[in-house]
Length: 398
Image (cartoon, rainbow, N blue to C red):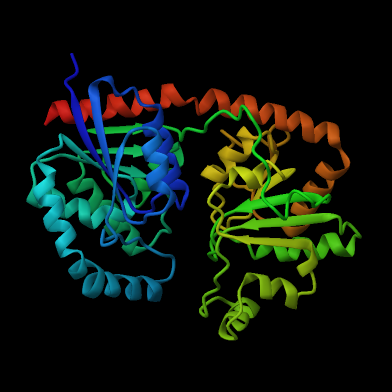
């Protein structure tokens, strides 16, 4: 018989991103008859009210130290230096508090692999077992390999959100831990469509959205090329709705870097390319559901070819066809729930958008299949029970 379990979840975001929203949905669906849960998150805001609604204690701890590997060696060196000389020393009070509080819990769950160094520290200073969610596929660098090896050595159990993260973990040098599970993210069933946010509501064009803060790997800038093609073909009734931060780094290649050096962002880049009128830039959106409810399709223009992010799952749950790149078709199946391209090709993406725009029956059929697919795979109670069983197994073995 399972004992009453006390779990502390460490969250690096606080409902400001996909990993945090995924954690919230898991905890919301867990049967709490034999478990008590507390959440500590790095960022405050709307997170408190969300967790209040499901009666889970949440604490905001801004000094929680996180660090992730990046594609470029120079950026990795810079980020690691900041972490080692600034973030880690500044987290001393947080770590001392964590050490004092740790004995109240049977297990500590790190909700993102960016907490790997903290997980190592907990392992060295406490007897409480640590588990971790692997939610991304780090770029194959020596830094990512180091990260995965640290995780393998100091974490008692791992949860991967798809088979892809598991395979990538092994490729980067990660070793099998005793306990691991592949648990798909939970996506709530849409029972009532929320009111679209202002700006979308009164826009009668064919709206294709993307939900992501800007980074070069996420590839949102590639939508500029797609918009140029559509404009040239006189499909100016398409609007790209971009929900997420628009900041551009000065280290970006070509025109993007030039715009950034002049203090511009992604919206300025679209204006310079002459297609600003085809974009609606919303900035950070606290309720992405109100974006999805007013759009006709979602596009994931990632340079990493990863068609399975939280944005994809939420779009499918709203009955939106998804255009994405990659080979993994568990969620986006080409011609069934959307269009799956081997790699990002602006002409092919434009062609897919035009097909959805012109063929309403196809778009509707894909949307219906999308809802069925995500309801079956991402069913809340089933996936939450898998996570609870996983935690119980790790805790019982300690």
